[in-house]
Length: 436
Figure 1 (cartoon, rainbow, N blue to C red):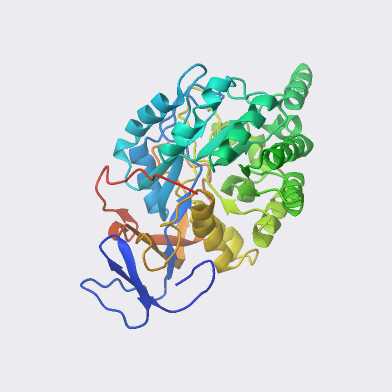
Figure 2: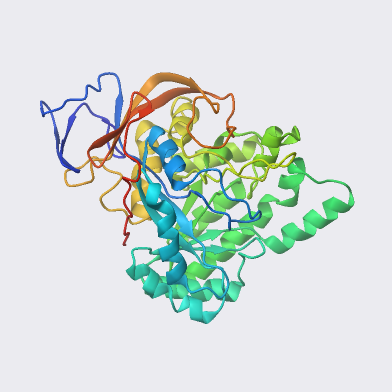
């Protein structure tokens, strides 16, 4: 059994939907033999995009619905996900939140929602309390993307109200003005396409936005999570803000940790799909992310799963990562000695439960939900559309060989993946009302 605190040989007893006991010599009506396997708490992915045509920069639905995306999640050892409700400008927040919940009717694992604030109108910000009352205490604020980005004044105003309501502010941190100017200049030189994205989005533009967001949160008294850190400078800004007393956490993604920037130079459809922001960067930045993950300066790993269907000779950006996150971090982090087993579980299971307000998740403790994963550290798998379960007809991690893979997933006491095959019932996932 592996937790964020210890590695030990023990049995986990489940009664109904909860963990009843952890100890030695426990027996039950059904026994799953985990000899040679790691027993982990169910992983939590707090950053996914299922079935969403509104997400920037393309009005194209993601390939995965809640039904297909959560099957992929379950097969990857993920027992809880958090997606997004994204009310448009002028649209009341509660109405879109309730509508978005209907999109998740087919979910097979438990799910929560963040709410994106896209409208700077003070009237929208005044509605934050009503969203918190409905079990959605986390709010994403964009510092980039037309149609999503709101002015700094509105970000600060929203953070003050989020703090007053005891919630969590989340930012996509990039300086869009700098990026737009650099993108335009590169275009005049004929430098367009995925291979130029990192040049147009320099580390300094990300780090500046992280610093600015941290200042807003500190003055507002808000907790802050910075999504998808991609560079050494941004990790340093999170660490420095924490030393100054800011309540701040940082997230890395598997593609930021694993994929090399050279993959964007091919010009093919997969390269286009990897042209995400903040961009995939060169090896020194990946090393900095791993160091941050080991030290705790980077708190969690989330997938940012957002694969989009190809269109003729164009493939919109979006990575398909919800199923592979646990295995990737094990292979490239644990097996290479960059992080230990406890930090792996902490970053993928336990710390996300704390950050996203899921008190009954992410731990193998009596009274917690019986979300348990049996992980075979010797199972080998080559990632491809044939070995994975997303509805997208490609894998962002195509051809990568993993050493270690989840084989059994238990959600609230029910085996839903057995020997790698999904065996659960459609629509069994529950909405998670979260609180801090």
